[in-house]
Length: 265
Length: 259
Image (cartoon, rainbow over all chains, first blue to last red; front, side):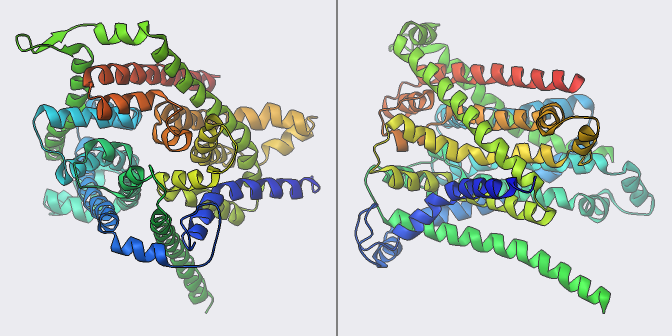
């Protein structure tokens, strides 16, 4: 068995190299002095300067972020409320809502997207920021509900009843007893919603209007010609995601270590 | 607590308007054509007849299914060993590896596909091969993570038990590990095959317009041509194919579980 380990490590390394190759590639060529995407002619920051000067590019970052933040906030609140309501609803209502929620999750994105596009055009809603945001909220809510429902199923029904008996109003029972118990589900639902919204291309592409681009639709629109500033933009995203991942993974680790230290001390 | 039931009702209205109604509108568009001034819309099967009578459309449909199928098979072949190797590592290395596989996925799909365009720009690969590279790149992490999840849930004493009962390494793998990881493979297939059928920006960015798939057809009819009726019919056909294949994978899954 021991002999196999080097081979398996080489294999894993190759797979990871495949995953990271394009990322390293864009970061590298974002510092290229020339337009070329194949020859590195020298170090320069010109594509970064150009990126910061290109208004449409900076706007796409802004729209991606603001849409993701609002869509996450709204879908997390609404999803939590609906999930709690569902846990007290009849079987029929539960079934109906689950089936409807399955539609955008199982349908190909492009079908969901053109459905919304046709809806907006049928009711003469001008496409733009509003329709883009509405579409994002619409496809995020089912994921939030999906990640909260299992937590609610584990919840003891008597807890909320006990809170009421002890003098809580239903609203107090909600945020003092129910919500703290399903917090994990809410947080993971919000994370899923944020990444879904921030990364979305297909639905955004069909539901946005003139002049409103998020990062995905911007990149798609500019790929017809070579635009090295897109490499600079990509590098910014890579750095941001890496920082977020490091922070979110290192902080719990440090906390755990501190806890251990305190226990031993 | 029953009063909480009422919290669902506004969402029912919202879901009816934004989830169900759009689907009905697609169906309506698919079964109608833009008429003239006297009769604004005409209910007809014309769009479907047009799709199935022209061999070009059928070819595109077959090409999309073929692309999705081959992508899925490559992902299983490359992903299974990777997931297996990760599952054999020490627990803390396992979580590091899972993180390493997940991390690139968090970076915008368009951005990563754009990067591949640069890498493949001056290579002599055919557009088809470039599209396959992009597809496998985008979907392989899903397959690895799904198979890894089912492998890591496996009771670690099962394989030594099989050895004690006289299995060699190969038999233990084929009779114990592989059957137990089938649910992971199946959820991997649903996460790879279904979105792969409808993908349209990977073929467009990497295949350079010469490699047309169903998703590109739909995009063309909605964005370029503006023939929404025919575009809706194509979407409906695609959604139906996906629904049917999903039904079969689910059924297969349940049958396995029953055994």
